[in-house]
Length: 556
Image (cartoon, rainbow, N blue to C red; front, side, top):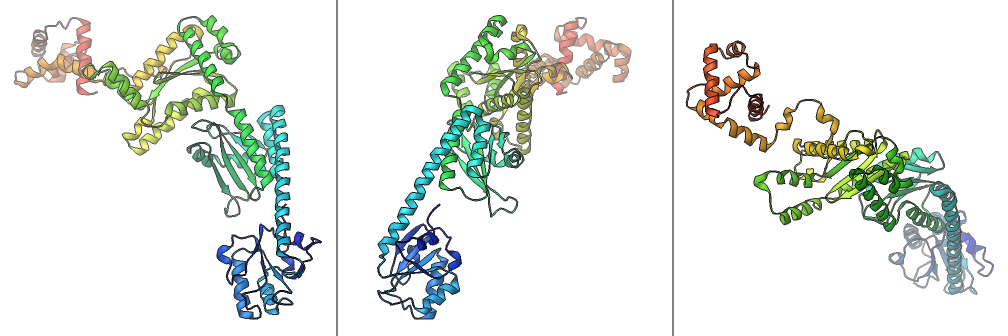
């Protein structure tokens, strides 16, 4: 521990005598400073032992000494050393009384003890304390390393909690508690999820402090540290203690951060190698070579192919909107321009695909399941166990993004979102079909302005919402325009008559009743429709096209 006034008083070579503040000698001394100024406070930082001879002080004036001592105490000076036999043979009673009244320790320094000896004693004690802290820090580092190698992150956290006399917890990239020590600390750590999420938004490395004596709801002081070397932290460490960390404890925390970073942050080369293997497995599955894919997957992804899985295809909302515009023939730019626009859109706001990757991998890691995530140009393709944590986390994450977009009622903020298509459950043999299903679901999500669509949803409900497309509306307008032009002349209501006849499946009497006309009138109108369009209503394909055109034109 650092030197205290008590340790200086007990120093046999200094021969110091306590004249006031006997009950406050256990205060640490940060430095010993000599000053004969009448007001040395502007030059104090707090924690000093001030040494004086009262060269420029009226030490016998009680009121002056009360003001002097009060200012020293207010500035954080922990003690006052007065050299006797220089300007005063003994400490004036006015100074002694002021020190006692303020509770400031007052030490009498004998004539034979130079101030330099006291400064050297304080400096030596501080150096010794720092050496002990560094030595303890190295010992803690060795112990933490041993625990990390033998028991993993859990053993490291237990050793760290013991070193700092508190608790420690590890969070994954999503902010969920992965491990904590002691066991009861898991509940305390779970209450810090919001703070961990805020920490993740800051560039790594980042840290923050919460709780402490100033917080009404927390008895402990908690330090949060991000873990990882990338732009986004891959994990976070929380350390809770009753008070601020000392030097030795700080060394232990820094060692734990380094070790946990090595444990949780896979090297870039290893991660790139795993992605290459995943991409190769995916290509083989899509090429109809499941056995070769299983061989290449090995233990890394092999378990994922032993049960039904789902294929997930995701792209950013900004890229998706550009793709949707590019699908309209009248708006197709050059190939070079399309690539430039897509690249700019992808980089416009944040990295939602990177965030989705973290969500999928973190959820899979927590549940002990495998997940294959492969970047594919401006897209992200993932293969995850059906009904597993990764698929569930993906859906929950996108739903949360969609809810946030709805609350903001924003157009610009939409580009931070995602568009995700998910296939039906499939096996390795049907991987190509599953990929096509995911792309179909993605296309429907893009056209409907939704962020998440599963392929099963395409077969439920009505096909009519699929008509909400500019190309379909243009076709409908072109097909029905001659009829609208005919009706505009006031020579008959052919569009309404056609709608009524088709809705009644060609039943003349029922359709005529709906229109309030004679069935012969309706027959005449349908012959006029055939003449104007040049198509036969006896053809079921023509009737289908006309019905869908009427639906698309009306926006139903």
